[in-house]
Image 1: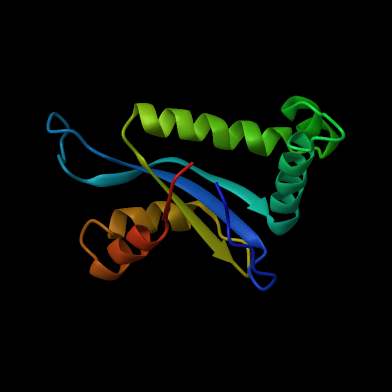
Image 2: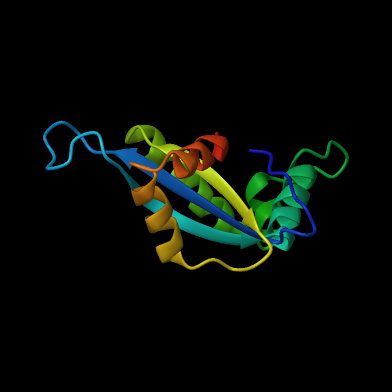
Length: 131
């Protein structure tokens, strides 16, 4: 996963969105299933540095060691777990960047409103990523 990092938008959030099945009370409704996972530009830099170190041919380093050295294990684990779970549960993954911190409730509201608000649905569509 490559994230675009902008110094003006230091706060990042990843969410997983699912759709209710035909057996649910509101079939076809989308809802927030995972997240948000919060991280910063500094966290992105540490993960990128760990990736570079793990691919270095001269100083052979395992991925685990590179992650440990750059202290990004928690984020890597959370994103990896989210990717596996989202794939298994047929969810979409979305990335948002912001100049300020956003509370969890805002993401729940965004997803709920996207069921009937065209603007929010477009925002979700534009924020889709692959992990």
